[in-house]
Length: 354
Image 1 (cartoon, rainbow, N blue to C red):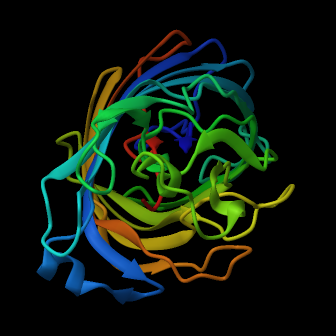
Image 2 (image 1 turned 180 degrees about the vertical axis):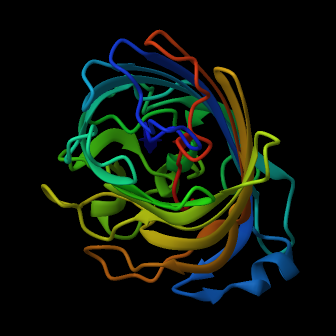
């Protein structure tokens, strides 16, 4: 999921970007998921037995934003993905070598617009913006990789796991609310809520339960799970930022949630998905100088919950990361001033529960 927010300029007398200003941002997201949960119960036996999944995610997001008026801006986001998903094959009676599935390439490109709801000339200490956008299915939702079946044999080209596919195969409607509130000259509160609605029900890619079958083995279980779902996704983030004297550094602390809902906002919710939610405490810092800003955050997980499958009701399980490493570099040009971009106005690539 692509979360891109153009926020106020922290520490400036005019907290908003100016008409004609362009902002270029390069951000990364990196995580490693190994801990299994069913509901909110950790499945510690998976690690103890050595049958756990190892899911590694790396993503780079290039975003270009243009401020058209004092209240309206537009953005184009282009993500790139490199990820892997691996499980011992076979898992029993003795775990075999890990069969790793690799997915990489261009992700789903998005275009969006944002509008400040209150006049920016009057509301310099706080405002709320609304955004809407479209995510196009430019990423490959049927990426294949060479790996063994669940018996540990027959290495061949197969669809990779849903969580490491570069795309989901569906168009999406991106919805966003964001805002900020200055507390004097020393601090600022901020928040955002983002939702990606995906009307498409399923795509043409078979799920892992089919992909890892040995030759000649008939699939069992619910046929509704034979193909991957195209699920909605969501993210919320609320926190504060405080400048560190006149150094250009700012410290941040936020509360973050992200996940995949059990049921889609628009359309049916068939197919295979791993619905769930994860909550984080997110410390971070930024450094701004001239027209450039660098930022780094480490969301630390404290709650995970793998929701039941939408139509089967099966509990299922999913791996969740303990940490996420987020970093970004931003540069802005044009307009009348050359003030550094807001330390809290960053662009993130948010991928959900795996």
